[in-house]
Length: 311
Image (cartoon, rainbow, N blue to C red; front, side, top):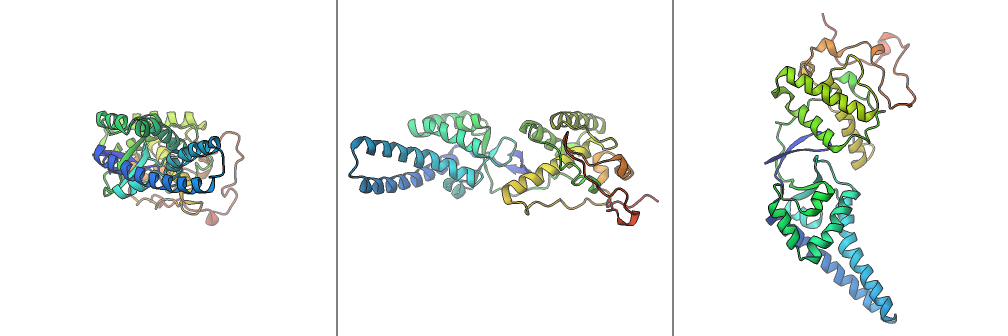
């Protein structure tokens, strides 16, 4: 059993796919691809009988590349890691950090598959998958991906508490493009396990991760924001962006606010999570224009933070 974390910051207990299930999925994909290749070849031979031999050879090569190489790449990209064979076997290709793959991942996997699957009849892929601790073939190693079994129930052991309500949306202007997948994985693993750590060790780790994240984004951690709460809020922002990218602009929504006792999860009492609005301006990328967030409004018109003031 291997714990992975999705791009939505949800910890999943997923088993990396092993050689038998992967081989079956590849076999089903090859059968489907060969059937399509034969059908397209018959149509081309019939419709191009009047062409010379050189033209027919060129069309044959193009058909081979498009159907047996291009089609699997397109299917994995559009289906976010599910081909016909993987769908039938309950498998899925994900990034090393558990997020959905993109075109570059599918491209690398597809190109290397020509050598280790098509040209060597799968021998190289079988050997690589057999000796790999997580059953990865060479295409997975170079693409930074992993094939997992997705028909495993989600557990609550890796639940990431949502950030305090007053931090929701405050990091919408951050540039997250320079943050590597390895740092995201480290942040998520910390958030899922921070309650199991010694408080002093956990606080030091959170500050170190927050500093690394702030360095990558180019914007410092706002004053008065606990490091763990900052990490949770930035992860929530990435969750919203990946949801919009994968499912459309209307699919992402902010997680439900935590209960009254939830702020203590981040290592500070509830009072520490209610700084004045003036002390916490919205965080934006360097050079971005700032927006008004209620300055000058009457107290009754300002949006609440979701926390009850202390007695």
